Image: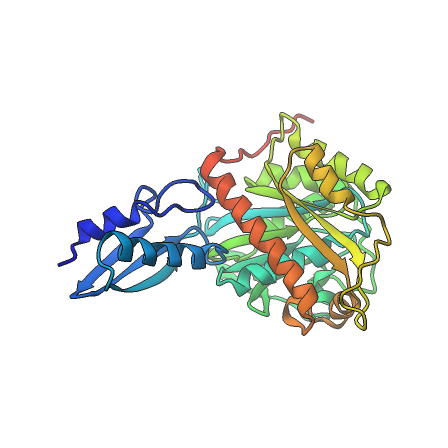
Length: 365
């Protein structure tokens, strides 16, 4: 007869691939049930979007059959408890486990496209996700999600008006573009823009989220500092294109978040527009902006490289038409975003397991 102790002993030989410890030590096993040769249990994943769950399932089945009972009929279930390292008082964004800022050193590198499809790929894996468009002067979310002209609702909480984010494709959305007529330019000095970002954090009902993805403005400036002062950012994804001009600016973004007074971990770097692949020649790659500049930059700074995203016509068309690549029909671009997101999720889990929580910065004016 199999016992719970036998099962746990066998599963203590199965490692969580990213964290480097076994499932039992990490308290990732629960609800063991045994009925004759049948055994079932649940593995608690660090994120619903965990890319390693199939590997862990096979390893668990093999361990039980090899070490306990070769005739065992093993059923492995999964649930998720997204890891979070937030140790602040959590009065701000109290229901958000991980806050991910997507940044770039310069405009035009596809940061908003990456942000939108990262959020959608996370949600596809089962995570609850929000997307905050913090690019006050060039908001893209209303266009990319097909919600131009829509306005969020308000509700009252404890006598205070709170904004309810729009929802599209399973993502909670907030953008200045949902509050201001797109025909009118947002002509604000830095303090006004920073105030708007604080409101997006404190006056929006984001609810319970595994991930809040924040599409930051290009460059390094007031809004970046305001965000770091307002919430403890879990980590940063840096977006660049392969050419030297973009790489030079990406280095400035990397340097900003590495400064001692900011010190926000960089989850990784993604190279967008890495190569052009025409629809009629899907096997061909044309390196229009240089080859693997982003990958070399990640190696230079010893950062995780999250992958290449190709320059594909359908990505541009989907963004313009309000149907991002991850909910479109182009498999090439979807594979690229899924691969990038899979590595980002692993990097976030490793960051949460091994690095202390990020502290909100104090900037002396």
